[in-house]
Length: 164
Image (cartoon, rainbow, N blue to C red):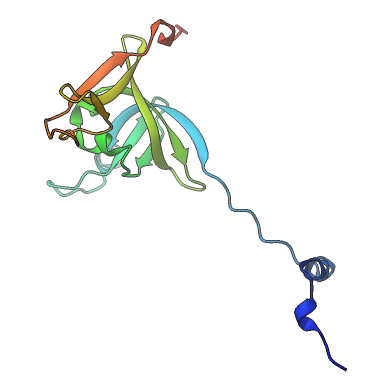
């Protein structure tokens, strides 16, 4: 008598698992899409100010977003977020940041950001006047190597923030 164990079907395996009470593997939780309004801050300095965390005088910055309601999110350093790490002019602006927050964390992956100036949404990007090329971070143009400039341009007349 020969057994054909290699012919066990996936359906048969599922039937055995179901009858044994075994649960199928849980689906991995998905990141949450968010839109945050706030400012870029050094999280270490914020914790020093509010909770007296000891810092070295010359410490490395740990950047994040402090939202209008006082919540903190740690920024992941990605190509789309690089400008928020290296261009301190952006730290002075009221920003709207779109991205993803990962399950059970406050880690923020930035997918897009803009500013709010005089109650109007503004597009923020870097631009090479020579090559007419947009960039997502400061530095030199990929084409001509000239420095790119920060542009802050109103989106449109419909981008005015409604008054409360």
